[in-house]
Length: 224
Image 1 (cartoon, helix red, strand yellow):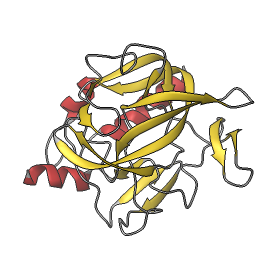
Image 2: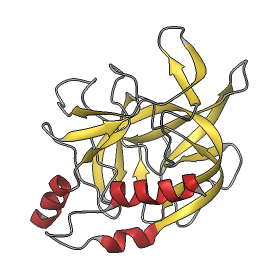
Image 3: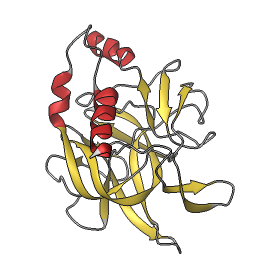
Image 4: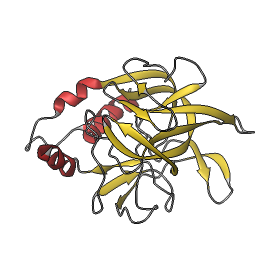
């Protein structure tokens, strides 16, 4: 119960917008609890595929993140849809459990983990996937560098492709580079100077994350 309450608090903090500028609380109505297998990309980086992916009508460069597959509760966004890139057309509302309804594919979803947890992560020192506590960190976005750019893998399609010798299942997930995970109903580009959060290791290319505070993004929405 403690973790559930913690998740609710973390989710509200992460996915709510600046209420003084405009009320975007309706975005919370598209959040749903997903039960079962999901890809956890929060501690991963991504590499460009050279393709373009369209997220909610906006085109971005596509990235691929290798993410561990976990089993349990997670947060999904019913407003997410896209097309193009490696996967092609996808829509979470139409295929809530997996991108194509089979066990060979997976959604990359959100769940809150802190330093008291252990989740599968790639260890750059040993070059192996290991169970490690996540290190949530903040950084300032600079899109001129791959280490300070970012990728969005929240509610993106993935393909299960490998299982390590220690039993960690891995998926290749495909999502936009330098696009924000929130607001939930609109695709907004990430810009240099924004403060972002991630659990990816320092130096990872295009770390999976999203900018904070949301106030910066809500200003962009007002201009559209």
